[in-house]
Image 1 (cartoon, rainbow, N blue to C red):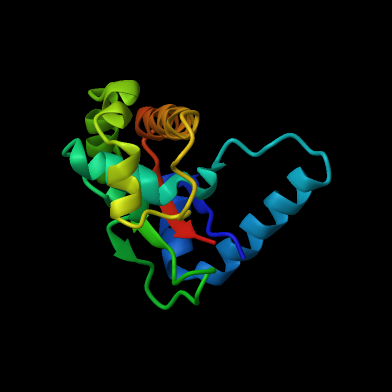
Image 2 (tube, one colour):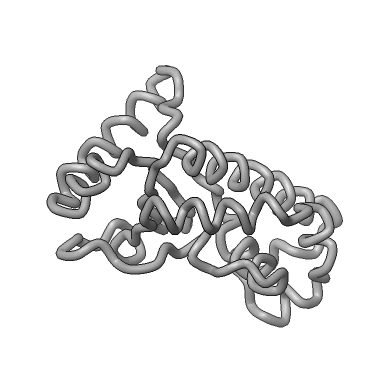
Length: 165
């Protein structure tokens, strides 16, 4: 089973509802992913960083950006396991703060500051995936997408759910 880092942007009222009834929002998320798999346009509230989440957390930590970008701040109360533990959440204010940190980061420079040997030595998931030169391009691309996703959420005054599935 793959470990995929996933995100959902939510307006403040919808975030409150998700925190109150996490399984209802999980059902909606599953429905939205199923629709996309069936050929529907992707829902812009959802994004995943594929298997890059652990590498991104490592790169961001080295760059001084909080790991909350990848892991969230705190678990959603009373949520079931969504794959690899319950989802976490980020408040509107925290999304804005993290977006500012991400916007101030040069994705290529942040990734280049970490060697493939660093990723291997730290046992970064997916293990064995960091030997090829284009593996860093994988991280850069996902970091740029994640920065854009956070910026759009911050600009719209949204919070986020974050989970590994």
